Length: 364
Image (cartoon, rainbow, N blue to C red):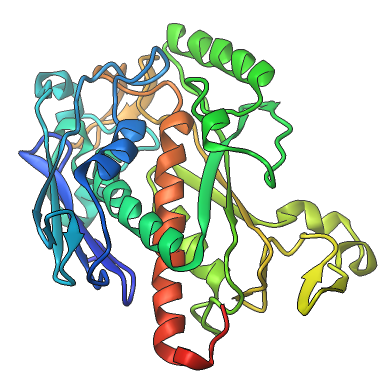
């Protein structure tokens, strides 16, 4: 019921924020892919709480346990189950939220849909659910790299009105991880950090934009009409907590151009068809064209804040709420590995689908 994603490379996440643990079951992973707990842990460490002064102070090691599907560091082709146990609970912080709905959060809608909800930590609506996605994304990245040499990188492009200039063709993981806000523009990163700290000290929160580039993506990925590659990428990114917008290539800015200004002219690069510009964002007609895939995801300010806000109670009475608990003043730095994971999952799934459909007739 909404917890499974993908076709050939399919994942199902499970667990609540303050339950016994969270994790993922991955079905459809090819056999004989070398993967280690350390490779998965690297990605989880980028996502985990308590990693810096601008993230939630909740302390979790997010240590992964591979329960099945891997033997001696090699995938078996059978379902892979990965578990991360929850340890640093403070369910007592959610007493008021038992009876009062947090504005712009999922409390009211979960109650309306199910008539019951896991109040502590937000349950399944918590970003803690994304642990399973990031763990699965680590495996998807490995498959993409080994089969097609694909590299997926994300970084913080904008925090509120602070926007960084970043060359998506040259940015590196080392540059992204060089600061706690994960913006590879060091001067702008310092300004972003200061702005986030200010919002945190005021009991408020900030939103922004994560940009993602997938490089060396082979031609031909994507299934017209309803499974267009950008459509699946949009669904993947928009399924993340706090996501509110999706763009690819020129995005909404492209609406300000004429057709002659916007079109990506073709030219021959040896025996390969290339484009002079990349306003299409690496996808045309729902199919990858071999250029870099460039997308952007907008994330709203964190909904749970300490400032007093107008709300209603579960019984329908007007009231106010100053939320307790440990929450990120800005989700963007920790959203970076989440967006990377979702993009990798889509590309991995479509890569396997393309190989299954076209086989030896397909040229990577």
